Length: 184
Image (cartoon, rainbow, N blue to C red; front, side, top):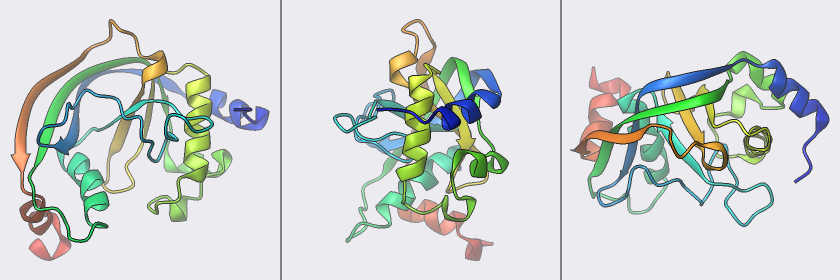
């Protein structure tokens, strides 16, 4: 994939930081929470496609991890009733790009449609970050008021911390009822 020099310059203007702490990941009950996704998402095209790479999506807040999966599950008919497992992970990254909503226009991301499922531009930005060999991205969650941490497999050190500290089952429909605006 050829990366726009302008996009590379914009990314290099943004701050990077290390991260060593707790994140959350919601998965199906039998899924490995430390397995990097090869099927794509907001910040990565699927492996096998131009610019595609493996990525691990996590959230800095527990409910954000569930909200990210819930947004996908709510699109399915019928909505799955199997419980999710929310994993608390300890992770470390050395060089994560930090993006805030105010940075979106310079990166060509429309802040007004960020919560939609049009990933064309964010995947291009993710591919450029991967090209620059950063091992992480801290960016706003499109589903919750917090940041998500995406870990890029190509640059993630084999010595970096990535451990499961605990896990709990969550019923999607019960969680949804408790977190909806009408629940208060």
